[in-house]
Amino acid sequence: MNDWIDFLEWPAMVLTVLAAWCIGSRRPGRRKLGFCCFIASNVLWGVWGWQAQAWALIILQVCLCVMNLRGWKKTLRWNWAEGVVLMCAAICGAEAVRSARQRHRTGRRAGRTKKG
Image 1 (cartoon, rainbow, N blue to C red):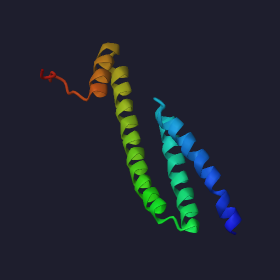
Image 2 (image 1 turned 180 degrees about the vertical axis):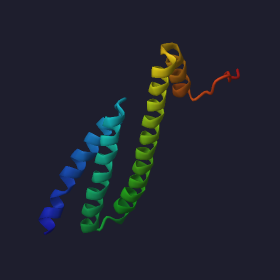
Image 3 (image 1 turned 135 degrees about the horizontal axis):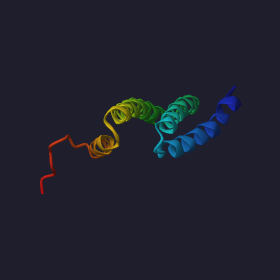
Image 4 (image 1 turned 30 degrees about the horizontal axis):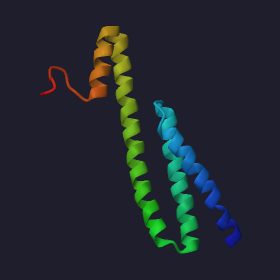
C-alpha cells in the first residue's frame, strides 16, 4: 500500500506544473482547467503528505485548495461578465463593446476618470 501512495508524488507534481501552465492562459476554459488540476494536485499532495506524516504540507494544501476554489469562483464570475459584454456588443454595436471591454479590463465605471 505504501508503494502505491509513494507513487502519488509524481502525478501530483505533473498536475501542479500543468495547472500553473493553464492558469496563465487568457482563455477562461483553460484557466478553469488549471484550477481543476490545482485542486486535484492538492488532494494528491494531501494523501501523500498524510502517509509521509508531513503535517505542514497537509495544512499548506488545505490553504492552497481554498485559494484555488476562490480563483475558480472569480474565473466563473469573469466569464459571466465577458458574456454580458459580448451580449451588449450584439445589441449596441461594436463601439459600445470596445468601450465596455476597456472599462471592464481597467475596472473603471463610466464617467469616472483617474485622479492624478
